[in-house]
Image 1 (cartoon, rainbow over the protein chains, first blue to last red):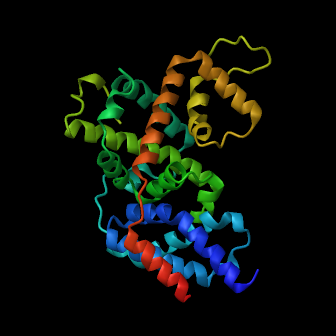
Image 2: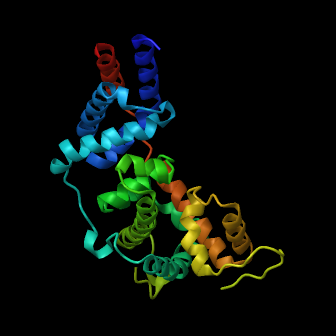
Amino acid sequence: MSDADVKTWFSQNIEGCLDSLYGLAMRLTRNGADAEDLVSESVAKAWSAIGTLDERDRFRPWLFRILHNCYISDYRKKSVRPVAYSYDDFSEEGEEDDITALLIKQSADFLTWWGNPEREFANKLLREDILSAIEKLPEAFRVAVLLVNAEGLSYDEAAEVLGVPPGTIRSRMKRGRTLLQKALWEHALEAGLVTGNEMKGYKP
Amino acid sequence: MKSGNDKPGIEEIDCMEAINGLYAYLDGEMKDPETLAKFEHHLEHCQSCYSRTQLETALGQLINKSAKDTAPEKLQTRLKKLIQGL
């Protein structure tokens, strides 16, 4: 492939990933101008590192990894966001059984709240509610949830982006989703979407 | 809760095991056919885990839909210029 062909291929693939790149950059920086700068910087770095892309069908996770690394090195310091949960309160070091037990315990109350009728609560949530809950997640969990749930990456691909083992992604997805449910419930109470009586005994 | 087994050959799993595998199932990471069959068999017989799966699916769809953004036109223009100049 000639240099011109490589550039055309690169340009087309960037175009195909652009909304996803911008979305992830927005969720990371929470600022439109910073997100645009982060995407631009990542694209420039990706081009300069194009020779390191071994498998072309891995372009997307490879590009996400570059963007994530750019964010960590250049943007994270100035990104100010509310953190609802201490990382220590919900560290990655907990036993698998503990998180599973929490998921089971949460299930009964959560279903009572959400499931009667099943979609009522979901219908009341606005995009802003969901984004606000996502933004409250500790970064490690937030990025995993975004890559897998929003961008449809496999655990292997998300692991490649973040430079961690796939098992860590599996663990972060569990904890991230549990925290997200907690944040949504607290938001629902604050916003008056639910009264709280639906969930007597709910202690996330 | 153990599900009733009306499919000979499929080993039953309990709710603890099902919830433990729920996210792998939802994320398309439950690749072992035997594990998948056990999980789906449990869902067919356990209302609680079935409802939980529905709930998590709905939440996943909301996250997916909510986290989508469209890159602004000025960013698209900026990147076109950037790539042309590379």
